[in-house]
Length: 165
Image (cartoon, rainbow, N blue to C red):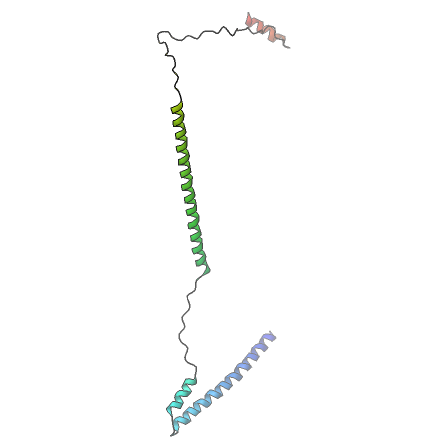
């Protein structure tokens, strides 16, 4: 706290000494102007020269327009999104074109296979004689031997003989 107060006191002393020096210089100028105006050797050019020594009045300043980085980033992001969508669209078109070409090739192969294929004539079925499946002489049916089956359960074998007879 003491350091802050000493700093402010030093600033006050500096400011007052500077303002006093400025006041004395401006006061002397005003006094010289008054003296010159009162004197009979008043020259307007000298007064205008004194006025020109002052700094020119500052012009009204206008704030500069500024661009936020977010606006630039948004533009770049929009361009990137557009590039990505066009890339996906082009890839999709290429994929459709490849599928269409593949389909045309397959249809052409099928057409050639059908053209090369020789149709074989099949016998006309006899509608006056219906088809009756006949037993083949190649296979001889065999009876199952259930009564000779070895089983641990005596009742199962006895029961099976009842059904066989």
